[in-house]
Length: 282
Image 1 (cartoon, rainbow, N blue to C red):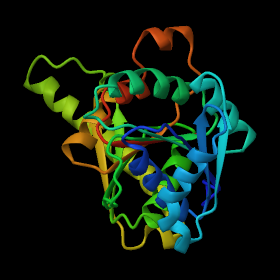
Image 2 (cartoon, helix red, strand yellow):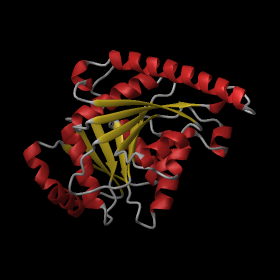
Image 3 (tube, rainbow, N blue to C red):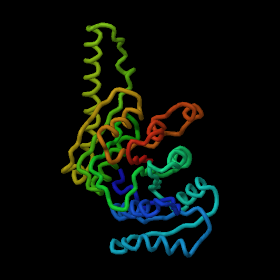
Image 4 (cartoon, rainbow, N blue to C red):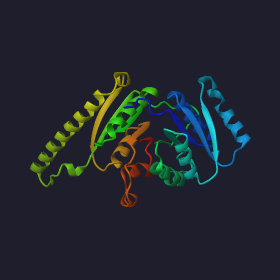
């Protein structure tokens, strides 16, 4: 499995009040991950805009930040997707502040479309900041899925690069797996026994995944396993919120069908009300 998943990072650049904060967040990530940064602006080429971006990123010269500005006219979603593909971008950063009125539209429209269609990983920032806010606690999904082993491994890699000390792996377990109707004390005891067995089984599965990750990424990390019975997406989002996680790491959704678009998907639960910054891994 790749332990350097982000060779290149892209960010959609809009000349809004959040421009500096968004650029600083993306630039810091590029430095941490030793990646090339692509600044994607939907619009015509402008020397003044290039100069403005250079001035904002001047403080990263000492870090040898490698970046390129890309201008392209067209529909924002189409432009960002096409540049992401042509530049082989591994991680697409989308920034928006919750307090802004346009965030509901931005997150509800552009980010959802990009999250569904992007062939790369996506990082959604709800609290971009010029001054770095330490990423101390990462929550990552541990559901049983072919992608989960890579997702957990990447979460440990990200934690190492961002100097995060705590990782919680949340195993979302569907209630129907218990398959016992609780209507008296006896059935309640049986249901609790079944739940404990499922928890032990899930914890063992996650421990085996962690044991295969190089020690350099797992050492000095406080690792917690957290089985939760409930609805996928909603449960982990709620946990990330109440535990005040700084980053939530999720598998990218599998190919969506028509029905997935009509009814809530696990990622859709997260996108509806972002509990924190969210990294969705392809």
